[in-house]
Length: 205
Image 1 (tube, rainbow, N blue to C red):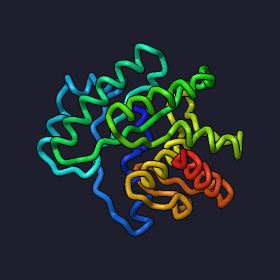
Image 2 (image 1 turned 90 degrees about the vertical axis):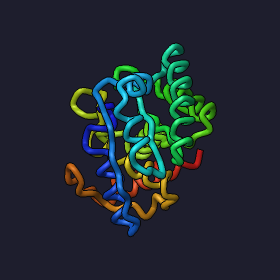
Image 3 (image 1 turned 30 degrees about the vertical axis):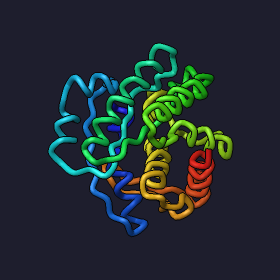
Image 4 (image 1 turned 180 degrees about the vertical axis):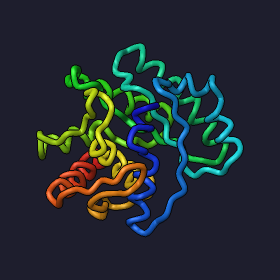
């Protein structure tokens, strides 16, 4: 949904990979507020899966930290994963984060996505965990956007580096100091190193 659409996350992943010398073709289908169940019912993503050859399909819905949301995420991650594998691609789950008023829910969000990934036998892009690892190094980093839920450009960049590294096997230490995609982002060397180290820590879980 908008946690993927904001700041052109797919374009950021493509730009990071291009900078590392491994061009990717990316696409995204997003609707504000959509869950995986909503995407299944709406149909555009299933049609895209059926009409183009993809290597990897990344699944993302909201934080899903509440018990009933966790059950829904797990159910629909499993259903999507089966359809994705039938189409010859690999399913991967992108883990987001809670809004800033619920900082204590990071662990609950992580648990939901890791349980869903285990049920679907899928890998995880640990977006929220990478944010936490970045804050442990620099608590002043502005990873939330102005509404204290959606990502800032820097917040999206952290996820983009994690997604690129998880999907391609690239080393986070090789991530660039910024990207030019839907937006242009240039980091100072210290912040770039924090992002690289944080992503490496999150991926090592």
